[in-house]
Image (cartoon, rainbow, N blue to C red; front, side, top):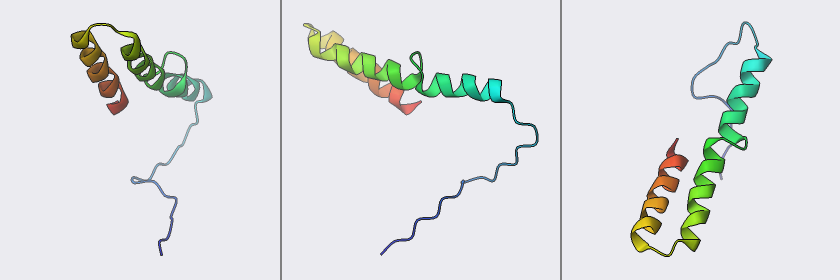
Length: 68
């Protein structure tokens, strides 16, 4: 049996919310030009790459983008 507690690792107290900044941050993480989209593009391009060296490079770059 396990118990799920939805809490932050570090407490956050937001005194002045900034919706414009939040929109920019969210677009960088999950938007069309964000980290996830970039990593998926690299990993998808590796399947059509005819050269093994470049295929390995695309795999390395794609997994590195996932780490961000």
